[in-house]
Length: 59
Image 1 (cartoon, rainbow, N blue to C red):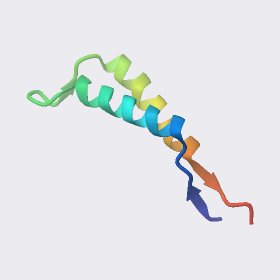
Image 2 (image 1 turned 120 degrees about the vertical axis):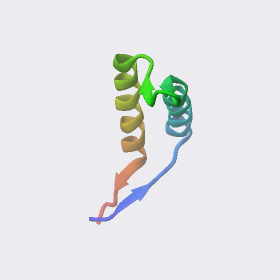
Image 3 (image 1 turned 45 degrees about the vertical axis):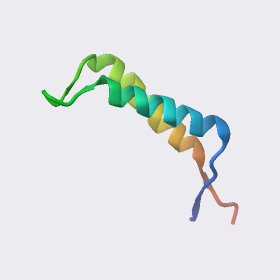
């Protein structure tokens, strides 16, 4: 099966917002996240928004 990435406005905006939030949560000095539970929620939403962009081809 072939998959195709179809970017739509909503998914792109969600990816940009969630990606920025994940980077802000990360502490680069200690290599840890400030709020691990919130980071997990952000990461799940990030993966789902990427999943909505990937669609299967109909053939």
